[in-house]
Length: 485
Ligand code: BG6
Image (cartoon, rainbow, N blue to C red):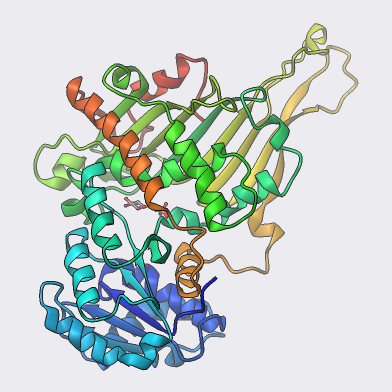
């Protein structure tokens, strides 16, 4: 690992992500004593704020977080904040930034975080380079979306690579900062119990669900034309799939882990023109209900009709020895009935039931790794119902529960960005996405989109507050599988 950075440059510092996630994460890290003592955070954006105005903006954003942890004072954190206005298209802002940061701070290391519109990435990188802010001590964190297809993603990656080599480029997928996602690795590779059955011999199928109750939430401009496949599957869900399916890395380090993930991503069987209609379902919500209240449909929120999908379900396969013939079902959508994100591993049933003649029905074991809303891991096993069994043996599925909230009750639940920002500052890329991974993800996604357009597939309607179009249910039921709602 490289030495910690002493200076953070936050591009897009006045934006929504910064106020909701980045500043709060940095505040928590500071309150826990995890930031380097002399670390200074420079916010930048096009707004012409003074240091004091930026600190006031941060104070407003942070007060609710501070109220939840009275042990932490806000003032020392606010004292770390400075502001330099930068317009990405104007080099003078970068010169002012370089002057403010100063050569000493540069030698102490720069952690740069871009949370701006992707269209600003290229000029921002050129500006940083031109102002001498892309030297050997600088590393850069990039927030998604990194392009809208393989070609545009390559263009962004090339622009980044012209100033920052891969080992200093940190592509963020905030799902990798989630505690339960990392716990998946602990579960798989910190226990000997699961791995022998974690293959086509032991697993019947895998389900990955990321269900959201929210609709557009004021993100109309961004979301329309992007859709669920590119917004959620291309990044978060494929990363989850890769972590579930990868071979054991030889060690927990950036190269070993990412080498194994990329092999999975490259082994994904294409869903293309010939299979898009049978292996994918797309939907768009119409008016319905959320949390018991009526909500408008997507097109009404948008103010015009649209072909953008707000729901997608896929049946994927990883074509390698380990996963031969095992379907990976994925679905994600907005305005679904509950907020619920989980990975379900359905194991195969016992080869022969000794209880069959006594009337007992056996269910195959299921391992459920719950990411949201509460984190937990649950193994469903068969147990005997208490009783004297005069009219047959009764077995029932019961959970072996690992509630992470209870097991680690003293630990504060962290924002995913806390982990990622600290790793960026300290220079550990293990939980960041490498260029070859992003490009493998886009290749797979582009084939699906091509399949949709060739087959003229448009989203089917589903009512807000339901589990997507009925075709999504048929996608698994055809294989005798039910989604775990
Ligand atoms: C973002 C997507 O990457 O992830 C959003 O752009 C989505 O559309 C969000 O709502 C979901 O993140 P989380 O952490 O709330 O599951």
